[in-house]
Image 1: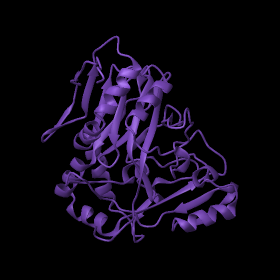
Image 2: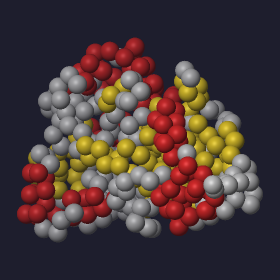
Image 3: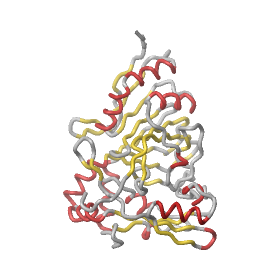
Image 4: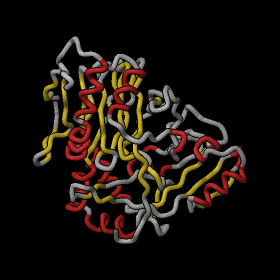
Length: 338
């Protein structure tokens, strides 16, 4: 029998939220100063199912005091959860990121002054990760929090205030359009190139890939590519019996802006009709009101159920090094009225 000397207790965080019987986020403190990485790995592995279940119930679990001294140690803890790796290269995300290990990469290479608005990771694509793990190697001197928001709670508020908008989102879904450069643009929060995004090297291969995905497309000047998704779900059923506002609507409407992209053209209903902009604005306001800012310190990490919780990034000053790992590929397809 293994004897793991690990003292882990519940951690209270300022502005922690209560949602029915769940706290958001759940938080754990490792109190043993002599804890080894192997002991922490075994502790996680032994409680893996419980931790994942709790992450879904609460939306997120925040970990402090664990022996995550560097990216390599974080990678080993990620492996302890025994989840299928979702390599960033396989994703259709628009962000520029740099791999550190097979499983871990920079959260986003966008300049510090850029705010990344709330979103579900890759909800604007046919494939998305179920789980996200974030790791803070170096907390910024000022700003740089990671706001997170319970989308199931947000949906409840929207159904009270904007029921027609929610009904239309459910019945029609959402369609996203963005312009990708021919080479990476690290000055943009959505500057990943079309060759990197689609995993191709030629225009013909790009078109073949887009056709497989049921996207429409248009080639533009300067080797740029405008790609438009088919209708995708805006609302997702959760295993808890609740539903979440699972989409990229807020981030696209507020943040998909650079020299190539206009946020006003980024999202429409799945049938191509224009959004209710007043309702979109209210959804954004409510999400901000419901958000919790993760108070990063060096070596903290977090486990997030991407189906339940949106995340973003506040602007910051100084050096900030936050890394991410994705796990378990899930596919989504729009079914009217689902």
